[in-house]
Image 1: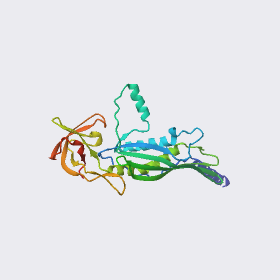
Image 2: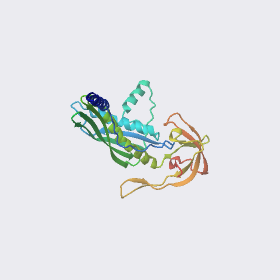
Image 3: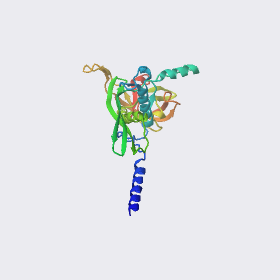
Image 4: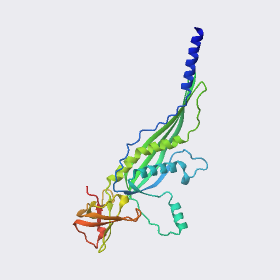
Length: 311
């Protein structure tokens, strides 16, 4: 009877050790934004002006502001997420020196300077790491937690006005547990910083997209002669053969005494155009040929008009 009882206790203890000593790793990320719809739309030109590290993290004796790993990491994460949304024409700004050097090596002097519609300015404003331990009679656990805070400003280049500003925080953690000395022990987990920054940026991406897309998209006349009517923009911006857009004559430019800023008064719709053909190899060289379905414009004053979506 005693032998049977001892066997039962031994088997129970062995089972408990096997089940409890299993290494458990859990990574928790703060809730992210809902998935962004991938329907095609008219794209805006966006550039990330800078992304800096305003915390004291990773700022040692040999720290270089121009080569900050946390700021570059945040910049790359944001660029990747914006590119994945397929809503913008993203323009490079941070590594322009490398692009110019490559053009110089290739002997290509034909670099086209393209301005952005919106600039994104961001910074990592908070970054911290902590360890939380729990020690019991037969077991111990250790949890590593990383928290990151990211601040973003979206600037309308045409006015210099900040049209959106927000701060978000993200968190990531990993836990390991040992029972009676059994189980895997882990030290510093460098990937947690990536996950925490990514979680914070993910909360802001949808708001950046919505604020850009809510602003009116515009295109402009490039030429109007016997060869046809050509406007800027093509497939990469979402223009398709058969699309119809409104043609608007620009309103007067006046200075608003309340803000001290120049503003354009509402324009006047003067017609509609239909896209007949799209061409060009790159976003910089793309164009569309159009024809008027309604109204007309003064061919000698092309810069007085613009093309926009019909709401």
